[in-house]
Image 1: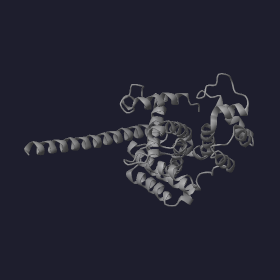
Image 2: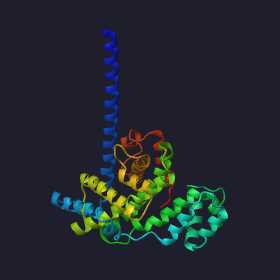
Image 3: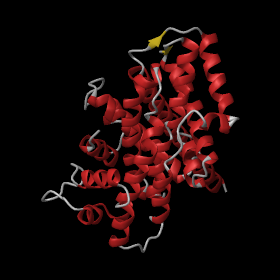
Image 4: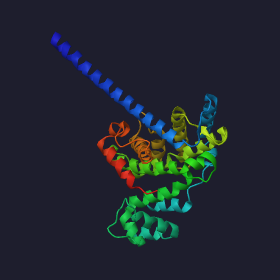
Amino acid sequence: MKKWIGRLLGSADKETDAVIAADLAAVSEQDMAADVDSAFYRWLVASSGTNASPEVEEQILAEVRALADHPENASGLVPRVPELVTQLLGALSDENISTAALSAEVGRDLVLVAEVIREANSAYYRPATPIETLDGAVTMLGLNGLRMLLARIAIRPLVRVKVQGVARQVAPNVWRHSERCAFAASVMAPGLSAGVFESYLAGLMQNVGLQVAFQVADRVCEGKVPGSGTFGLELFAASRRLSSVIARHWDFPPEVVDAIAQAGARDASNSAQAVAQGDRIAKLRLLLDASVIEDDDSFVTTGLNGFQRRCLGKLADLAD
């Protein structure tokens, strides 16, 4: 009887230890993510950051959070997705569409034709010989590649919005992060049983609210933004919710909306986990490219697993 009780108690202790270990790992993961976010924010606003008072920081955060309660006001601060791109994305939802039909759809817009051919010749696809025709480019990209390219074309003006002040200063790097986050999220998605394109779209869309938040901060601080990394964490969280609200207002797929809203949460959906991982990998890529951190930094060596580090390296091939 005593042996049986002892085995039972021993089993319970092991199970308790396993739960504690899992909780500690989750806390460590969240701490690492917060450290990366803080470092990235400080780098992003280095030229426009200021020592703002707690009252000013709270005013900015309160206004951003309030916008999330009024999506029609928030969405009015960024341009709408072009109608042609929306139509094309609808056509691409047909998994059985032919290459000829795809070429015909893309060929309706000469600027889009140039974008497709340029993408097919990029370092990511690395064609053996230069691709000069639309049919060849469409074949190289495939259905999913075209979807991703069209999504980038659609969302790029939303993030690189033509405004003044801080929002304009940070826009190029915010967009670079958006592109890399989307790519990394799409790479992480299969291993998490998440939708590849949905994860990609969420990665692109998640910074739309951040650009609105920078417009708010610029107005409150008169051409500056609070430079504190702690404030940056709060701003990222508030702007992520704002992005999800705008995406829902624009009738984005629920999976995309939820992935944006839940990214970084403990019990996040599979797509949200893909976006959160892609987000961190993309931030580390930009910090590496700016020589803020080195390849042997603990953010990279212990913060990422082998597969994530390979994705980090692949992001270096993405052209701006």
